[in-house]
Image 1 (tube, rainbow, N blue to C red):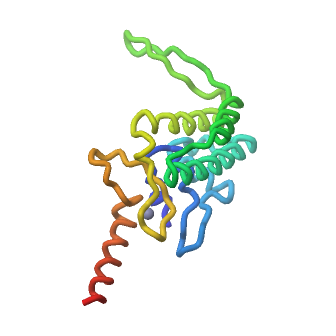
Image 2: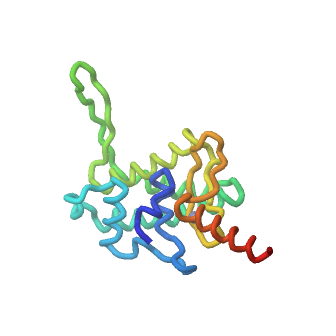
Image 3: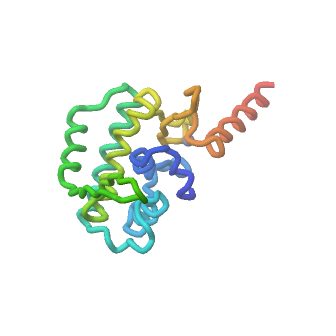
Amino acid sequence: MPLTSILVGGFQWVNLANTVYLRNGVQTDFIDNEESLLEYLVASHLLSPDEKDRLTPESRSQIYRLRDLFRRMLTDITERQLISETDLEKLNDIGKKISLEFHLVREVQDITSKITGKTKGDQIIFEILASFAETFEKAGMDRIRSCSHEECILFFVDVSKGGKRRWCSMESCGNRAKVSNFYSRKKDN
Ligand SMILES: [Zn+2]
């Protein structure tokens, strides 16, 4: 499974959760070693290739902790439309550990502001946590879904106008479903 086919969540935190997926029916971890974790972070634009040595072991383990939390939360959200208070507290505990810097940036005549992490790890965790809040602002809880294909465990946020998206991606699961519907109809005839 190429990495791009699991980066379909639409938001960083959902993509992080999607690094656990089904390959031939077997639950598989895309980021089960340091190299693949870095590959995922680069593909997600959270890290540039020349920054690969700037992630501390502590930040790496926080990313895995985040993923476990997000996977559990996504299951709760898609099954019961609920986020546990304890899980939200755990997210905040991770958020409390990061250090941020506030910058004023000159853009020709204008001044804008920018918040960045003190370290690369802080920056990555900040972006992932911010994407979590952003999902609720931009889409809402009822738009957070799990793929309808029975052999897929990926999650996504449906930001389409009509809100009828069913598949993690039309190219993979949407087509897989169409093909199997076609064959089961043929069998019935
Ligand atoms: Zn799918």
